[in-house]
Each structure stands twice: as structure tokens, then as C-alpha cells.
Image 1 (cartoon, helix red, strand yellow):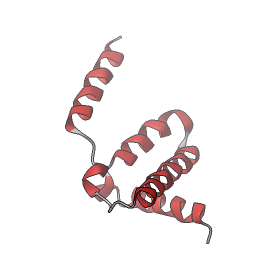
Image 2 (cartoon, rainbow, N blue to C red):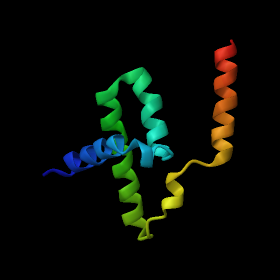
Image 3 (spheres, rainbow, N blue to C red):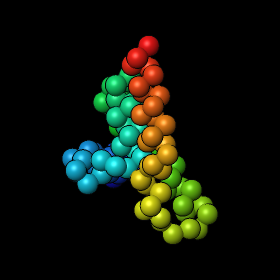
Image 4 (tube, rainbow, N blue to C red):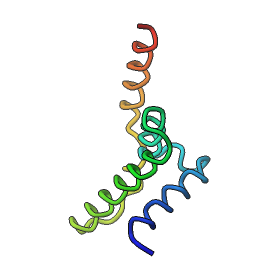
Length: 89
């Protein structure tokens, strides 16, 4: 199996387990991109982003920190306010 295929399968697995992975930053990014670009391109882009994260972890020789997978509450608040203004316009 190629590495790209493995990352795509990880994203597909995350989509199947949405009740557990729904709060991840990658899933917010996936859903936002899916609206404009479609499912296939969004899956590939999310897999590429995941590979960049794995590369950065390996390059810096840092342990994986799962707390970085969840979004910052301030970001969620700002995006909700921005979404409100866009829908109101």
C-alpha cells in the first residue's frame, strides 16, 4: 500500500467515526472545503494536510499532542461571529 493511500484511508476512517472525530480541526477544514470543492478533492486535501502534520511531528522529533487536534474555543467563537455576518449580508 502506498503512503498516500494510507492517509486517504485514515481520512475515510475519520469520516466513518464522525461521532468521535467531529471536534477535530481537520474535520472542520474538511466540511468547509466539501461545500465548495466536493467530497473527493476534500478527502485528498485533508489527507495531504494530515501528512504534513505527521511530517512536522517526525521532523521536530516531538511526541504527538492530541490537544492540538481540537480547535481553540476562541477560533470557534470568531468563526461563528463571522458566519453570522456573512449570512446577514
